[in-house]
Image (cartoon, rainbow, N blue to C red; front, side, top):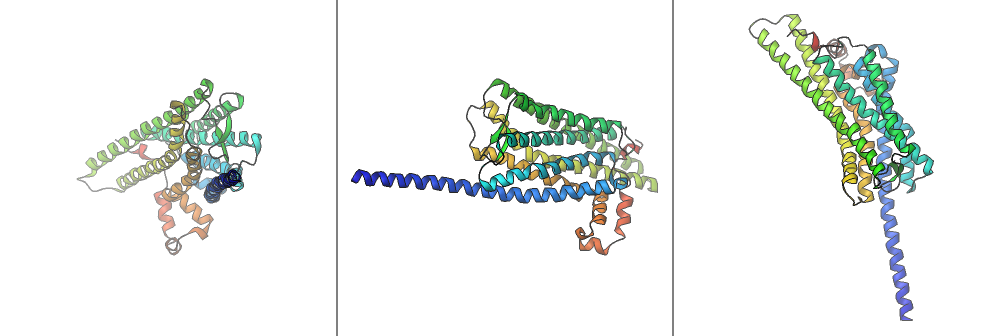
Length: 357
């Protein structure tokens, strides 16, 4: 009788512990679902707004550099509209709702778009490096280099994302089981070789390229600015020199804008890269919640780029405000003449190469 009572008590205790664990996971999934729902909504609004302006006012904003940013916003919008709702609904349900086929689809979509975003951001730095340091691409219009570069980035992203579909790694459930990505736990050499390739081609190489290009850009801007200061220090500054100074300031602002965008992107993707390095180097698997955090952070980052872009690019911001007057602040509504000032100050995004050194 006593043993029976003890068994019932133990059974009750075990049941209670399981219920508590399930309740704990439910709260985690609920929090993740709420965060992703907010993030997805913001990403759809911000990226959608920028894309709408790009397509409705291309004659004002679709320059060569802006064409890269349009692709970045398009990729973020695709993920937010075709991918993230799957994770949001699965998080609220507490498990993956879309089966193995849905897992493969989601993993391929997010991997391809994420890789292409990194490559495009790298291309922006390379384009600016060629324009500023080597004084080519004087015009703002889209040229053959930008078209080939964007096409090459898309092709390379597709090739890498197809890898897990043909046996080079695999798309599986990750973390707490409400999202999918490449397999980080399988110790097979073929699986690990994919992770190593991804880290090198899609993270370390692009980051190194960005660092090199932006360092050269800032060095060139600083050198030319010092030269201008020496030339015009003891004479009255003409209208031409004023324009040149404006161009230098615009170039510095543009480079700083791109650095902000890249920094935000790296903050979002570095945790994932660290997780991949841990999976490659260590035989100990990370806890499911820990592996879920980097994936969550990358999704949150999808709404950062257009916000930073609109904050720093005055001409693009003006066109957005003209298209959506409800987004204007009170100061912008009462100072309509500021439009002409912005338009005049943003005639060119990359004119530092016209400065005579």
